[in-house]
Image (cartoon, rainbow over the protein chains, first blue to last red):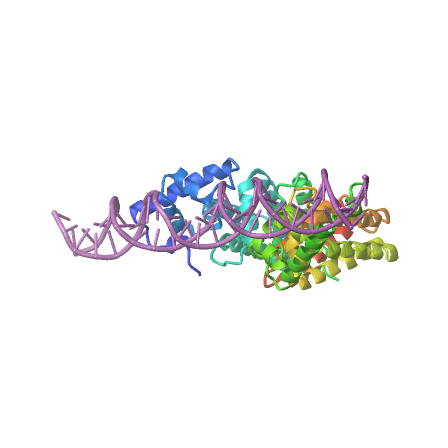
Length: 193
Length: 193
DNA sequence: CTATAATCGGAGATTATCTCCACTTTCAAA
DNA sequence: TTTGAAAGTGGAGATAATCTCCGATTATAG
């Protein structure tokens, strides 16, 4: 398996303290819809120097990913849980519906995912890859069970999710998102000609 | 009907000359994949002053929209043409397939559309609205003909298109995009329960 | 209690965006 | 033709955001 969080050599005490402070402050700010804050100001508000911020998080996206890493991991866990307790096609439906609902309530996550999915910097997009993986597993199981077609890859579903994330702030986000999921699910059940 | 291009009071000769020079140069640069050029430099390269650039196009997106306005209008025309000559569901399929192919060959348009669709500044997104409209018409016709379900709005299809535009630079863009379209079309044919 | 390696912090260099207004050009009326 | 007012120009420099550098500071192994 690839590198994991737990692989990293332990940070020095002060480094870890600063890193945590940055993430905590960023999470708090994101929760208050402060996304376009000057990057330097994250540092000021978290009580660390600019250099420290840039050392820990070279880009805005890196910070965002750190903030939402747990939340994203939780989503993926839920997918695996559903996968273990339901027929794969039902698990997929339940997961995707829950995904839309969750995003609806967590704007920061939606923004972050939209960026991460678009990012082609493999390291940063670790979160997006995890999501891709659980969806791929669900699709494979369901296809093997014969409940959905087998000629559609997880990437296609990710494109739809990308669209959903990117349109998070539209007035009709919820309606549109639900309908896209409906189309994708119906399309998956419609076995190929 | 709302305001149209032809409504605008005619520009003074020098103003029109500068505006055209800006669009021409921008189109040329976009065609060469120069998207992240300093905004000021568009002006220099087009041989006009910074102020002139900002007066004509207050934002990068406004410039991009002007550059791709015709191309987008052509896409919409094609949709109406198909609508007039084919059963609505076939026209929709043909249009969406063609859309993916066209984007595949026109990165600048893909980038522009991704931005325009995300933009909630109604004036700028005129192009996106036009696209929305032709899709809505196709969906309505097909639904009336009973060839697709009638409980899905154009917004849902736009979300999928948004995802497609946003993932334009993925290595597997083409495969994914084709598959999403397949899912959407299959989903549309699968009448609601 | 060092020695030293890791980390900090923030001044300021760098880069990008956008505004302002003295000057130039157009054009319609005289 | 002039010609005056309105429309438009251009680019220096104000504003703003990003990111780097390195002397000072702090943690930790021995």
